[in-house]
Length: 88
Image: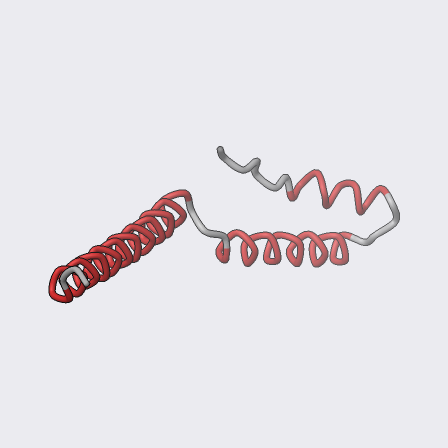
């Protein structure tokens, strides 16, 4: 997805048609352009999002493996305890 370019000339002409002077129209258009660039600079790219998703997948998988190992350890300890007591 690409973002459409900001048509600063059209904005300036619209402002001038509404009664802004050339200097005022240029100032407002420049402020809009600067604000848009600041917003776009802060946005995450698709590559950033893919990296974040991969990191989350790794963390979830890691904790699932740790939980499975803990469960297996409890089963083994329980089985050993049950076998060591013997029948009564």
